[in-house]
Image 1 (tube, helix red, strand yellow):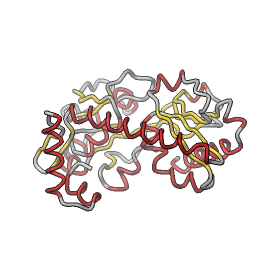
Image 2 (cartoon, rainbow, N blue to C red; image 1 turned 60 degrees about the horizontal axis):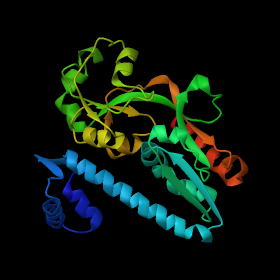
Image 3 (cartoon, rainbow, N blue to C red; image 1 turned 135 degrees about the vertical axis):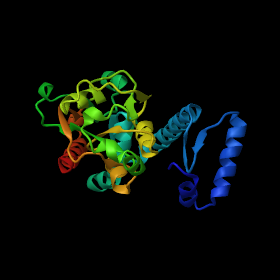
Length: 284
């Protein structure tokens, strides 16, 4: 949310009440969870760690609640993917998917780190997402072709308007945000620089282990980020982020949705897959 006023509005309380709760929580934990900079706030490293723990805890509670309800459900579809795919691609389309499959179908989303997802043999999974080259698949289950473009917060764009109006090869002095975890093939700033003829550019990066945190930092005005088509639309629609350029650079990899051996035997899983592929086609 990036400010306490918006949190207060969402929770139907006052900003001062939110501030008191945060101060009380920081006192109980013995550490600062937020950095306050002028009119903006963002998570400290300890705050990011606590946020991730809370999210995992809530996910476990949610999974437990689903498990209790399973016996009363007529059908269940389990989708396995990374947290980023769940957060940016599935969540905005969850209600539409539910309507398409019917209210009697329980949709379960299991999130994994990418390396763990590739090796998962959980027999409950019906559909799983994989990132791979276009040449390694026949393309029938391609959800999104990888396409990226620079994005930033509107205030960042205004502050650095002169620099951003120049070719990318002259952007070396700007702050860049980069994913720092071991690369599994997803495009990096170096790949994008090469695609626009700025191969020699070697700026400094602020690195993140999670794309959610990276985009939130970009929305807070802390630097330029790479935006993946299909993942950033909510940020663009709310105005939290904007495109620096009008074009996307396309690469020879993509996000695929695959039916598991179990999913191939479940009619509802095939319907779910068709919905996901149709959503990808709408994005382009």
